[in-house]
Each structure stands twice: as C-alpha cells, then as structure tokens.
Length: 185
Image (cartoon, rainbow, N blue to C red; front, side, top):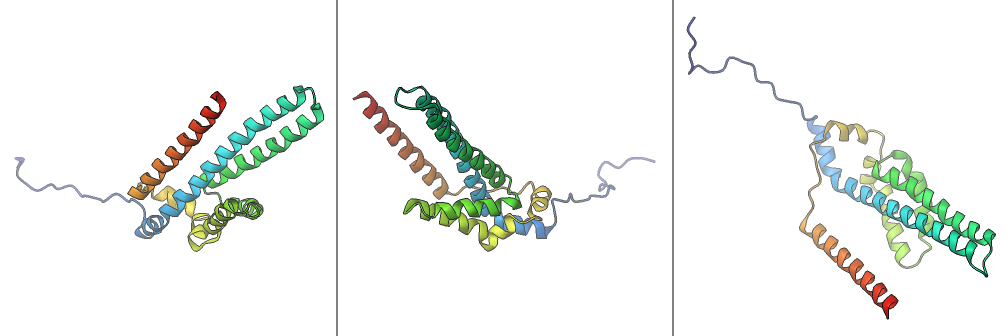
C-alpha cells in the first residue's frame, strides 16, 4: 500500500482539557482579589520578620542595659515574639488562601481598627477583602480545587500596579535616606 504524502492526517485530534469553562470563568473573575489577599499575606510575613527582629534586639538590649532588668527584656521580647508568630501564621494563611484565615484575620483586623487613622483604613480594607462576596469565594473551601484545575490562569499586572510599586519603593528609599542622614548628622 503506497503512502500518500499529501493525504490528510488520519489521527484523531483531542483537545487538551485546561479545566472546565466554569472554573476558568470563576478564576478569571477572582484572580485580582486572590492576588490582593496574597499580598496581604506578604505584608503579614514582613510584619512577622520585623517583629521577630525587634523581639530579639529589645530582649538583648533591655536585659544587658544598666538600668533595665532581665525580666523587662524578656517580657518585651516575648510580646514581640508572640506577635511575630501570630503574624507569620496569618501570612501563611493569606498566602495560601486558606479558609481558616478568615477568623484570626478578622480578629486581628478588628483590633487593628483601633489604630486611628491609618490602621482603621488598612484593617477596614482587610476586613472588606475577607468578607466581601469575592473574598468568600476566594477563601472558600472549593476555590483551592479551582486553582489546581486552572494553573494557566494568571494575574496580569496593570500600569497602575507598576506605578504604585514604583511610588512605594521611592517612599521607602526616601525614608531610608532620612534615617541615614539623621544618623550621620
């Protein structure tokens, strides 16, 4: 039987399954909210790292100073250490979009509302992210399965995101420059 090189392929073409269209639609509708919640988790991790360093430095400083006592150093260092653990735990929950993070996140954000004015705005926004309709879906028990079935759906940063990042970096550099100039002069 001669082979015709110009014949149409005889193989069966099967489209690959990238997840159901319903899963893709849900993920695309919530991917920005998902990204913002993960960013909150990163901020909690930063707070955990900072509090951990403060715990170590304050415990050592107060315990070794002439006017301080070892007990005071351990209490202050211990309080910062506990906050560091709580913040790290919440950062893990938010970064992983774990459903259980709603309760401890709500409690800590509720306490943070008392830090007027910036804490009120920031923690109010976190409460909105957790308890809004999109937050309920993203932090719901079924959403992790949707993420696993739609790994190709990614968040695409907007121009506004990049501008905000540049502004935050410039503010951070400005604060670092002010601190450095105050220490030198």
